[in-house]
Length: 366
Image (cartoon, rainbow, N blue to C red; front, side):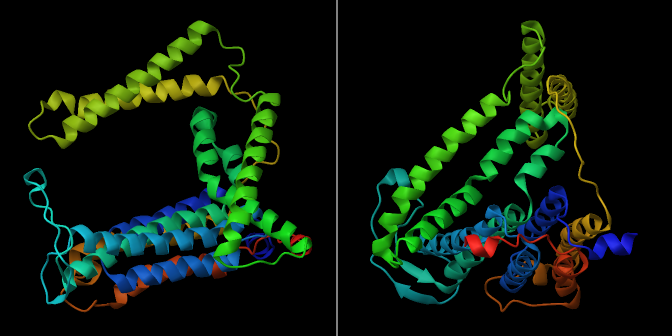
């Protein structure tokens, strides 16, 4: 039965894809080796190409790649603009712009060294890889099924998060609709001059879709308080607000070594307890039915394990092989068998998870 469910095409649980991508993002956040970061990006791209569907949100991954490239370029330019000093040989010199005394310690332009430039490049690559990992989850996970799978206590928070994460998929779908309409009219214009004729219809389409979504959610009862009384709603709000304050104070007490110990763990525990009670009270107001709930099977477990294992292995290797995981900018990036194995585990879902269910009409619509 397990073998049959692994081979037959089906869409994986969206939570599995999010845990896989967040695990890889956690692994990237601990790295400073450009080769390993680039390998993780390639692993993510391979899994997305192998397991994405024909759904509109699956086409948004290209936007995240462009966004990652822009992050790298901006990070390098920013390092040249305000961080030109550093070790290593000087690559080139730019005219230094003097700043007032209020900005002491900051230099604009000036000498740009090799280490400064490589530091900006590595930082940009790491941030871009994290964004691409999140984009992979957006391309692979169905946001509607993800919202349906959330527990009632997190339903309202999850609705806001899912709507926020759906921005790029919605934009990608709008761009496809506009480009398809232009091709049908015999206008295949390309280049910078065609951007204006694409951006305006895309914004108009996004506005119309937002109005339609708002009307649909209002008709289906989203945002209504159900049978909760005004006293219950006030009590729920007070619990969540008190929990938030407790978490903020506890976090401050935990990070500040000079703060009284009463403000660290006791406030954190109290804040978590109050926030949990608030979420549970809010979840009781959500009434919904569950038709064919998504189940976790072997494919989901494989995807989650292949995302979390790299994060754990990289954390261990960061202590044992710091020169490999945290490669210094003054030396060539080093590699080891353990580091390569930790990164390549992330590619397992491309081969050992069920293939997605493809839409036979997607090519016709495109």
